[in-house]
Amino acid sequence: MLDEKRIGILRKKVSRLKQRDEYWEGTIRLGRMWIADDDESPYRPYVTLIVCENGAIISTSVVETRPAPAQLFESLLRAMRRPVLGGGRARRPKIIYLDDPDHVTALAPQLAALEVRCEHRRRLPVIEEASA
Image: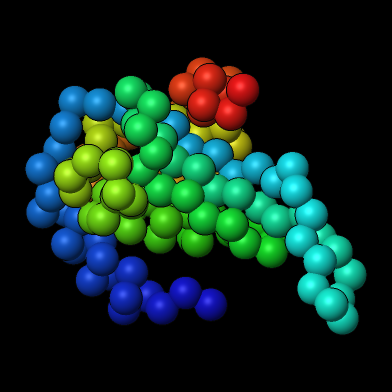
């Protein structure tokens, strides 16, 4: 369960960030690899990837189970506040494109409160280019 107080603090800090005229793409996909611990069944992890329009990776994570929309929202907030090395400075994009319509429905109102549009795109060309 996500800590609402922690998310609230993070949301407030992100709301103060400078907004850039750029878009980001985000996806959660089943990884192409298998992870096997000694005493457990092998599993394929879920990979969350957020990239900027220029192809720079803003955030990535690998988890055992598919993240819920609330977890993706936290990942987006953390990406805005502290992009990974090479991802540029902290900032808010104007638009975030996601390939899961259910995530867009869940996150669009929360992101709109931060003046970030959230839209569905079936294809995410920057992510597809990076993972080809």
